[in-house]
Length: 190
Image (tube, rainbow, N blue to C red):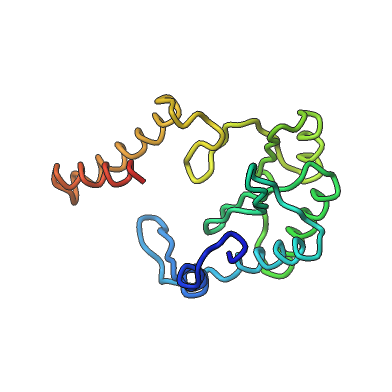
């Protein structure tokens, strides 16, 4: 975080959100007790250590040359890597180590490899190594389209439809018309 110029206050917020976060899960319409999502932090530690010792490079973001190695929200991860077979093998080994350490199982059948400016043959080869499927952009991450034109209405239609569907059920239960409108504006502005 320091390398991209974030201040101490921001770093404290980030560390606090990772170390003190409490979540609960909705199971059959009922919230479970809150718990700390600690196991996924172990995956971050493994990936960061591999990056520190030079086994993984991450992907460069032009023109700043910022190296991005992963995005993570709960158990949804995007891992960025160079289009080098050795990095894919390292990622697979890290994921297997994570499984052993945490007791959790990576669902490779729900995972995809997506190449950006990488040949289809290489993308297929990497997907085969990871025992998952390959996909071209755009793809969905947390319900949002990645790699699609952000200016196109067609890109945002499924997102808006999902918000409308969710709001329709909330509207009947909780929100007035003005409350629904405020929530829609807030979500779309973010």
